[in-house]
Length: 484
Length: 95
Image 1 (tube, rainbow over the protein chains, first blue to last red):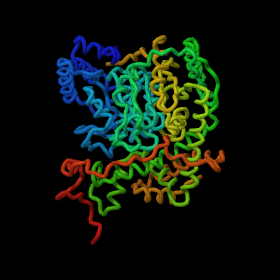
Image 2: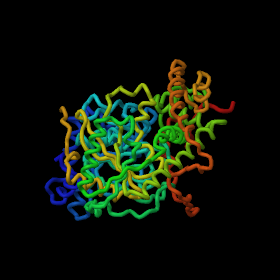
Image 3: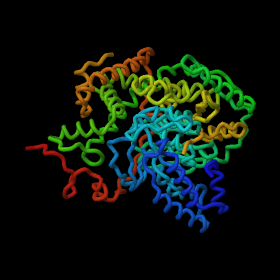
Image 4: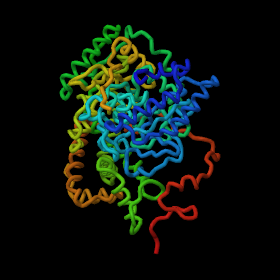
C-alpha cells in the first residue's frame, strides 16, 4: 500500500478497495515501526487522525468526497495546528499548543485530508541538515549516517521512507528543494505569495513560502491544488487565479527551451552530481526540449545577500518570543530584562541565536546602509538576472545541491560551509520564483536532485516538465530499504 | 570583519539574548566568519540600483474598517506562562 501514489490511493478510496481508516492505520503502524530510527516526526496524532479518517470515510460513502478526501499527510511542524503542539523544532515552543489552524492546515482539513502528525525540522527553519532541531537530528532513509537536508528534513524523510504519502514543507532559502534532493523525492516551492503564510511561523517574511513534498509531480499537483490560493489573512498573499495543476501535466515538451546557467556548473559542483544532472538534461533533449547555456552573473552574491536579509527579518520576527504571552519562560526571573534574556537565551538554540545576532548587527545604528540596504540592492540585481534569462528560456535547470547528502556532524560546527550548501537554491527565494527538485539518479547510493526553476506563477509548467520526465524514468519510484 | 567579545555582548544585549559567558568566544568566531562571507557583497557596485524589499511588486491591500475577530482572550491565555484576571504577569517594572 505504501508504494502507491496519492493519485492511486485516492482511486482506491473511491472504489472502496480500502477505507481511509485502514489506510491511516497502515501508515500509523509504519511510523511506529520505522520512525524510531529516522526521527522524522515530532508529534504523531494517532487518535485525531483516526477521527479524521472516519469522517472522511463517511464523506466518501455519502458521495461528498473531493479529490484527496481520506488521504493521510504529514504537516511540517512550522504550521500552526489548533489543539496540537506546534514546536517549530524549538525548545521555545516545546509547550506551545497552537490556538488556531494555519491557512494551509485549514485547507487540508477542509479537503478531508487526514493529518498523521507534525514533522521534525531545523529550529525555526534555520538549517540545511535538520541538525539544529531541539528534538534531535533526522536520519536520511537512504543512509542513516547521512543528513536528510533541511529545514524540511522530517517531511522529506517521512515521504522518502513512505511514512507519509505526501507532506507539506516550507522554503526560505531551499528548505523544500534541498531536502527533497537529498532524500530522493519531489519537492515544489511555489512562487512567493502563492500559498498562504497565515499561521506559518515566520522566519524571513519576504522569502518564506509553503509548498509540497511528494513522491511524484502528479501527487504534488494534487496537493498544490488544495493549498494554493489567495488568503486575505496573509498581507502578501497573491491575488492570482489558481489553475487546476493536474490538467496540464501531460503537455508535450517539444520545443521547450531549457536554460543551463553556467554558474551552476562551475567550481564547487561535485563531479558525480554533474554527470547525473547531465544525463537528466539529455533525457529532456530526447523529450524534444532545446537546451542552451545561459548566465546568471550575480549567482555568487546570492548567499552573502541572503545572510543579511534573512537574519535581519528573522531578528525582527523572532522578537515576539519573549516569555510573556506564550512559549518558554525561564524560572524565577528577577526583573523584566532578565525574563527576556534568559527566556530567549535558554529557549533558542545556537544557530537561531547566531542568526538573530547577525540580523541585529546588520540592522543596528551605523550598519544599516552597509549591510541591509546593500543587500536589498543586490537582491534587485539577482532578480534581474532571472528576468533576463526568462526572456530567452522557459525553464532553468541545474543541480539542487552541489553534493549528495553529507554525513551527520560533517558541517554542523562550521556555519559558513553549511550555508554554502544552499548556493543553487537561495537566489530563487530572493527573486521569489517557483522552483522544484526531482530525483534524477544516485551518487554513492545517495540521491541526486535536479532543480527546475520557472517564471512567476509558472507552477503548472514546472509540474508538467517534472511529470513528463517521471513518465520516462523511474528514479522517483526507487524506495530506500528500512530496518524495522 | 572581526567581532570582539564586547561586540558580541553588545549585540546580544540589543537582541535581549542571554549568552553564556563561556560561549562568547565561539559566537565571536562564528559571527566573524559569517560577516566575512557577507562582505563578498562589496565586490559588486550597486550605485543607482533601487533596493528590492519584496519579490512581487505589490501594493499593500487595505480592508474595510470593521471588526473581523472575536475576543478569544481566555483561549489565548490558556497557553500563557502566567496570567491573572485576564492580564499577563511579568516581574515588577515600576516600584
